[in-house]
Length: 538
Image (cartoon, rainbow, N blue to C red):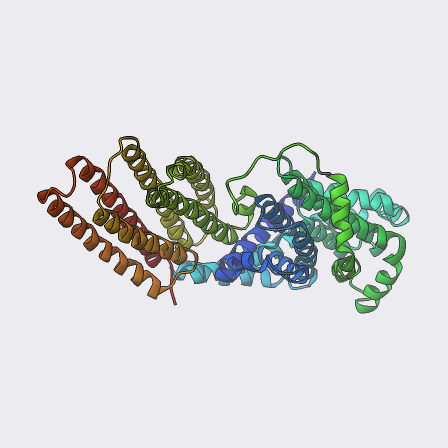
């Protein structure tokens, strides 16, 4: 019982330390990690590098793969790109094994002490993040020490030693043990840590450790497989690719490469089985990627065969960039939320264009498109808001939290722009149904104001995508011009009324359209100001 309590406690500290260190590294990576989304659209080789980088930062290949499933489900990433990221994630996860295999446990109290000193003596986000990394690293090593101490009595148990020897002669059983172990703890890094802890106590020979290690790599696939339940076909295929990649690698190593790997890692560290296991883990993933990378298309074919296309219709998704699985990596999730907000903003722009272009072109059927888009905009507002609520509950920097708060306002402003476009469409419909006529001068004033409003809004969306100080200033200047255009439009209208050039009835609808356009420019200015107030712009 004391062994079990010690293992559970040590494993808990290990996982907590790894999670804390990963969260700190992710915050420290900041904007660099946000740019990952832009890189994802490039080739498969870049995908491998991205997978290595992200997993090295967040310290979890499972989280990276779940994120990949989310990207594929959202439609951001194709299966061919997902293959590379999944491969890279398997390499990135070896970093933790290498760290814990080093005999540097004495730094645990030093690392925790330094981290706590930094934490208590600063209020800056960047230094708090550094403190998290130090504290997380120290707790990780502390957990390893707990594990080693808890497992020490196993050296005296003859039955356990016999079982370990039997695993050396039955690799398939060892693979099954590794699979079950990782499935239970949901972390291949934790499983590798336990193997290294057992090896450090002299109770786990390398020959028994290798099959378990191979099984660990298959067990880590279960997280992505479970995450893909209820997702799109391509998302399920991404999870299958992860499983197929590790299953093929395990088969290759069990049948062909175990002896060469054993010889290599033993030659590098003859007396340290823990280091041998860590090096074998790294070699497994490096060789696995090198061998399977040229045949990635076969992994895609396997996934397509396991999850085939059917004739059944697939519902059209409004969202293009967000998926709850991406929340596993908050920094990247923030950029996904911004992209989705821009997607929503584009729909609002189309809604305004449908109304106004239909009016000027005399194609009133086009105006009806605005009413359809309004429903989509309202749906997107709810979905994005729900995503932002979940994101704000994650462990993120205070600066990111302020930006997310700003995004809440931005989403609301974009929805209101959609409402104003809908108002304009209703006014135009009423004007058409009642055969109300506008003068050429009033139409010309509306056209000038519409073009200026549209330009202001388009620029505000660009600012939301890529913050730029000069562009923000231009949006604010354009909004002020529109305020003046509104005043001029009202003044000219009353002049036309006094000279009996237009009717009172047409004037009511004309002024309402002018007011709605001016309100859209105000809300566009709000978007630019939100970026200015919440984003550090170089």
